[in-house]
Length: 112
Image 1 (cartoon, one colour):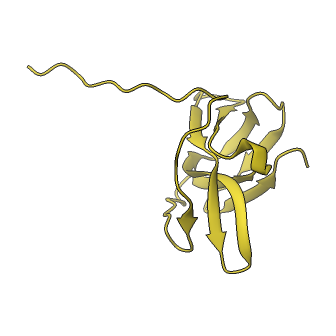
Image 2 (tube, rainbow, N blue to C red; image 1 turned 90 degrees about the vertical axis):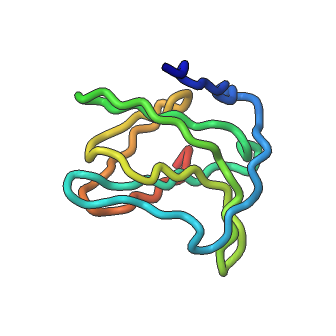
Image 3 (cartoon, rainbow, N blue to C red; image 1 turned 90 degrees about the horizontal axis):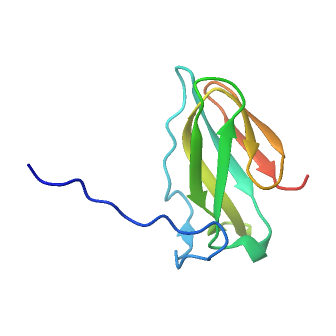
């Protein structure tokens, strides 16, 4: 039997070196009780990890990097959670609550 591999999770306060993504370079899996979430973040959070936690069961805690997203109208800094169970989530460190709906992509600006 081969031991399970592990990897270090980047610290929420230490930027990673992810490059920018380009238009249409990400996929989301939505529908049948799942939705997606885009959190727009200030540029000073580029490369950091954002974590969200569900407010009701089943308890889900997920993290993803804030990356530069190149779009036709310019670039933005955003974290994409591509497939989440429908529900309400709290953004760790901000206290902000966001809702994920069935078959939809929620777009939320941090601090708004």
